[in-house]
Amino acid sequence: MRCAVILSTVALAITPASGNVIFDNGIPAADSAPTYPLTQSMQAEDFSLTEASVVTGLRFYALERADGYAGSIYWSIRNSDPAQPAANSIAGDTSTAVTRTLTGVIRPDHFNAPQSVYSIAIEPLALGPGEYWLVLHNGPLSHGDADNAQGFFLWEGTVGQRGEVGVEDPSPFDGVWQQTFGEHSFALVGVPEPATMVGLGGFMILLLRRQRAATLRR
Image 1: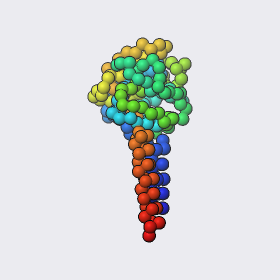
Image 2: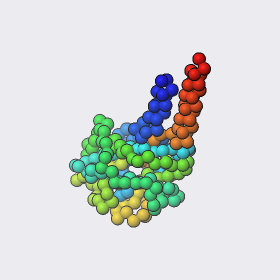
Image 3: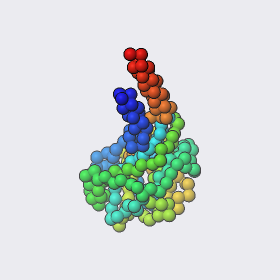
Image 4: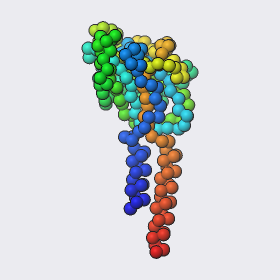
């Protein structure tokens, strides 16, 4: 029974719901974080993985004014090409299943816009060690209105530089990336690489067999 419980725990460990942070690019800096328009531009930030991982979700900080959020988020994970995202996506979607969580922070310097964390669960995506880019846009790429005082949706930045500086591709989103000279705040969640979990599962099965054999000898 004890081993059965442990094996159940191993099985749960490889489900997407149990993801841990596998990359963290920081949180917004107090009330003075830079912001990047997510409607009139695609925004992108690089990330690196030191070991094979399975990405199961992402989250980022944003400010919204006057219903600026389009109700969905286009996301894409791409290879590095270099110093900017590759033209083709490894994985991506326009997701309406976005969880918005208010942080309680209000930005007086942005028309008192409230800050929220936007979280998206994705189909498990296996990535090897290396450099990648996360690309985001407010709504489908057919939606390219200006982010201004009448309404905006802004990806908040963070301080310091990790890897390459962020880049943006303004409407009409033709793949001409420009440096933003800043960092975007986000985190990726995931689970240990499959090989690690398979090895752990095999170890537990071996342990179960040994305990069963010991019981039969009694």
